[in-house]
Each structure stands twice: as C-alpha cells, then as structure tokens.
Image 1 (cartoon, helix red, strand yellow):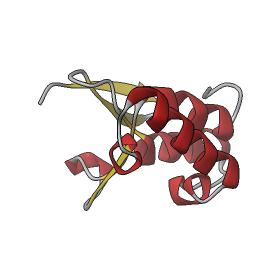
Image 2: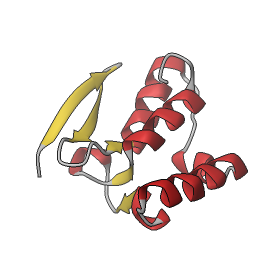
Image 3: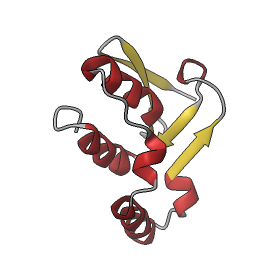
Image 4: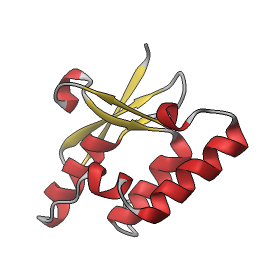
Length: 101
C-alpha cells in the first residue's frame, strides 16, 4: 500500500495513493494541534447530515456505506484510525474548519 505523508501542524496525516482515502483521525489531531479544540470523527459520523451524505455518495458511486469509511484499530502512527473516501474527507475537513476544508 502506497502512503503519502503530509505534515499538518506538526501531525503526520496519511493519504493512501491507491484510493485517495485520508486518515481522518490524524486530521482531527492536526486540528486539535492547530486550535486547541477537540473534534472527533465519531461525532461527525453520527451527524444526521453526514449520514445523508454517506447514503447519497454510496448511491452515486456504488460503494457500500461501510466502505466509504474504514476504521482500523491502533493509533494513526501505525495506520489506525478512521479513513475516509476523498469526497468525505473534504466534507470532514470543512466540518473541522474552513481552513481544513
């Protein structure tokens, strides 16, 4: 698996080049590093608007909802965390802040 590493406010945010999925857990850590505020991926995923986006994107792409985001055990440094489809990653970034979007 090819991974590109991005330094975002001193936090390494991994990006899988094979499918462009982004480690959203690491991105949330970068947001906390930049702002001092904590926002969790699970909070975003439980949002009604996010649920609607997942259903819509799944229907448009033919990708099942449970594949649009993937959760792996462990810390982001070891590949763990929640990985998001690139279209969802943009929405997640916008939820964090305009700068991250």
